[in-house]
Length: 181
Image 1 (spheres, rainbow, N blue to C red):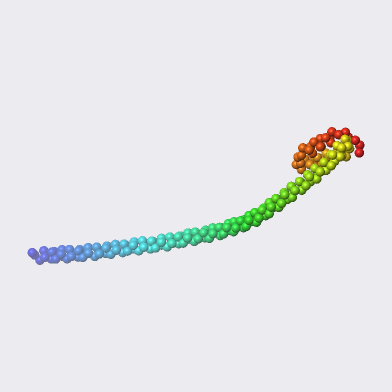
Image 2 (cartoon, rainbow, N blue to C red):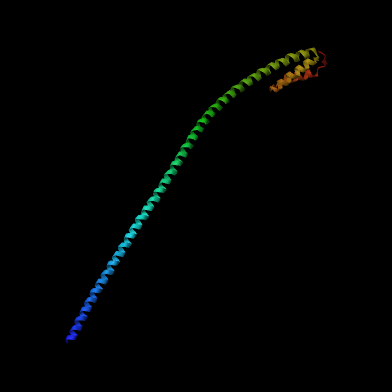
């Protein structure tokens, strides 16, 4: 090997060594940049996730607060409805008691009215008997007696008086000849 060849071999060896070193440093730099890029991406993903979780927590809290407010409003509404139901129930109880008292009073009045009607009917019955027998015994009837018997008989019938003897007595009195008072 000549000196020129040896120098060329040394230069080539140096170039090859420098080239390997340069390749090593370039590769190392690329790997370092790649690691930095991956770290930046990972950090960005972590930060984005944290921001998303923060917003989700905020929205969730807002929804929770809104639900709690709705529940409070509905609970107040139910309290008012229950108060009204209680008030209405008390009023119904009072009305029921009043109705019961009214019905008892009506029952008492009905008994009194029936007794009064019975008494009145009996008095009219007796009066028809007295006037009717008097007129029949005389064989004639005056205008005032005829009017009196008619009014008594009509009242007796309105009070649900029903007696064949009174009906016959009235008919016989109506057939009598009319005389002046």
